Image (cartoon, rainbow, N blue to C red; front, top):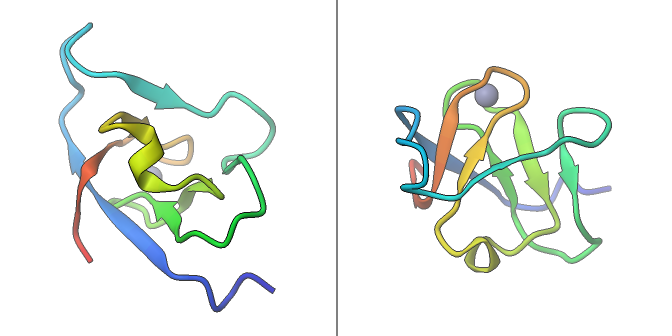
Amino acid sequence: MASKKEKIYLSTIPEPPEDSRTVVEWIGKGTVGLFSKDDVPDLCCGKCRAVIIRGMPRKKLKGAVLKCKNCGAFNDTRTDIN
Ligand SMILES: [Zn+2]
């Protein structure tokens, strides 16, 4: 059902120094953070291409770094590789 949604592949960065950036890691079940049913593009890991967050508009993350639960890569929400 969600297949027509766009995907955004974020660019991966080295682990940010502590306190320099907000790092968000989904700690719920599974590897995908589900926030809402809003029709917004999935935010995907630029390394392993897994969906990291679904239903969260990118601008709401305010430049946070997303840690991929699948491969452990750090993904910068400010830049993407699309
Ligand atoms: Zn990954």
